[in-house]
Image (cartoon, rainbow, N blue to C red; front, side, top):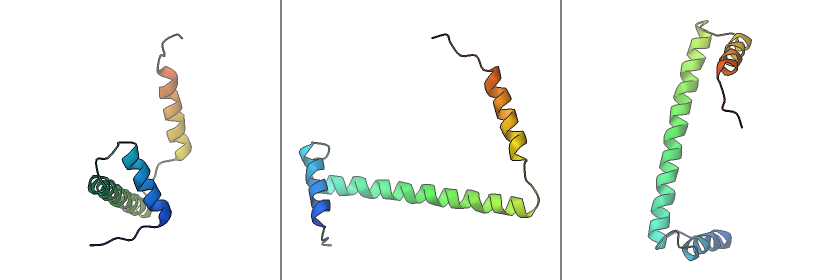
Length: 84
């Protein structure tokens, strides 16, 4: 497979190689594809959570946001922080 890069993309790749972060272009591309795959997995998980949340809302399984915020504030207030 051949890939044509825009000049700014080529410059970015060269900068990464010059910094020594990657040994070669293949390593850089492999890392980029791994990151893209990870991002896709996270997006899919997020879509699943949104789907579940939407279904719960439709079923009336909701929590009052202000009550939740108040509970979180109370928990934070109970935490002790070291003196600085």
